[in-house]
Image (cartoon, rainbow, N blue to C red; front, side):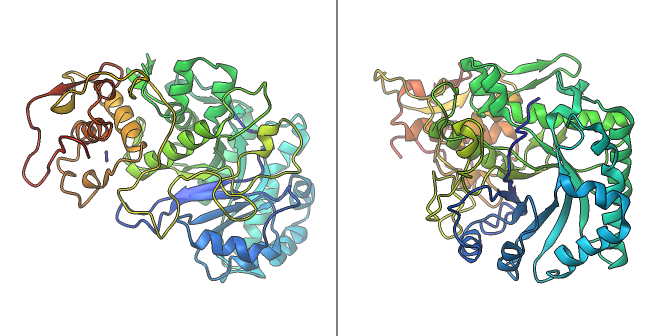
Length: 466
């Protein structure tokens, strides 16, 4: 199958996917595991939960030894963090940095698969620029301590940023960093050490600040009119691509285009206070489900095609002691009893390479509430529809619970591996699965029912009720 931040987030759910062929090993899917709560299950129970899913990485905001030990010998990658409060001592005292690494890394590695140490969280955009000036020296001392233990090439050192590090984010091709020499020094450190730039894009906040229906569809990966980048001629069909590409453009403009991007946090709250727009289970399930589906497609972004960015989703559990609005305590994918808050198809035992999460949200292409005529035939894209729009249709259709396995590698309809071919198959299957209701073959007026059978070779396009 072919700028907004969450400054108080304390959990990172990173989904990393290695291959279409492995439902149980997805190297770019991960999760944030925050602990601002008094009702979390024991670490051992959490480790068992994670092993039953396709989650391959976990980000901690600290370095809780009980959790790090519980994840030993699971093969799950672990991101641990030094707090903002540790930065002055890490920056000024190499011995403090060495002791920190000895206590929090060497005591557990390699049984516990620590892969990244994050020094601080959203430091550069804090009002205290004195702390920001100490960030790179602190990271360098941690790096030196890892180098001394012969782990410099195995465990990366980074820090996490809100989208506010960008001085410009629209259009995506004009993305640029602010914070002058501080940011430049940080990027040089990352480039020199092969470490990733870790960023927190939240389309949820874009919708919160602009709660129009078209913005909602743009943020939830649902069919929409798109937004044109006039510099490149690229029409962006979702906020995720736009935000990640803005970071990519900023890196390129700064002379560091080879620095890897990792999404350290992203997510959507499933409930909130009465005055919080968009905070409901339908939207949370749609966002996370469609995001996971897009990552699995490995389509990438317009400026970084063919590769999925490592993404940590916020969050593993709710954190019931966090301050602020109700949404801050309502990002959890799982409940304290280990049951799923909603299903985004992460269970290792039930997931198949072709399975996709469902989305109960009702955007433009879905069936109208009033029954419309049933039309025989196959639902196919209209001529001249852009690949960007077809990709949005494909993401939406496969996010509705239909079986898109045939258009994944090894499937009967994978070849030709084009957006147009894969979208045609998925759009038709969605239409057939919707009892051939004509409203299900609309897709923002980019599709129509045809009497011509598009099947070819061993690739059979269903017709009739499926």
